[in-house]
Image: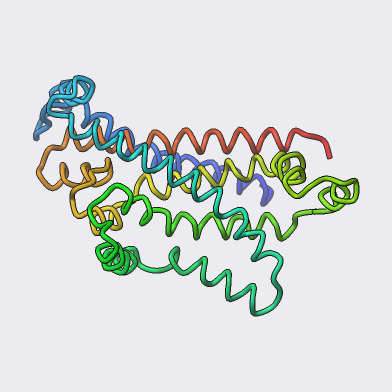
Length: 268
């Protein structure tokens, strides 16, 4: 038996184990979300769709549906703002050299690397002083801080290999800065802008510490409500909310994988 043939079963075993580890928690959440109770020694739980029905009807699951709408609004706004603001910041950083670029990249990385609880306490003091504590706008700005850091670092990488000769040619031909941006820069950066927006969306969607500290419990989000349901022992509703949290991430990973395949299929 060759070394390559010996590695094939091991690789298959590792991939199978990885797949089980990835799917098992999701399957457990799904079973819990459609169960009323599950006690020893029963092999299967007592089935019930009460948590999903309550979520759809807005009765006892109304907390989840309202929090999900709040989370969606926050995540969409955070993603769009992070994408729009990080493009010029990332380009400016890419134009720097030496210690200046390192300093700028470090400043962008700081809210990403800092412990969320420490970042949240600092932002809480700041927004309370500004009168934004416990408000939707305050939570949005708090979510934007780490999202902007991630997106700026992303665009730093984009512009580090960006070829701006087409823009130079457009200026040579008499195009104004606005025309260059609209007709040359934006079409070329459509995909990075979308990816930065998705990154900002995900950062906000599952954010807990900043939401609790800055929102002060007055701005409910899906992640915070799920945490509360777990602590109160409402397992079925907590599992339902957890599945709602996972759905956007799964769809975005699928979209990213599809985009990568399309790029790989394009001949160079």
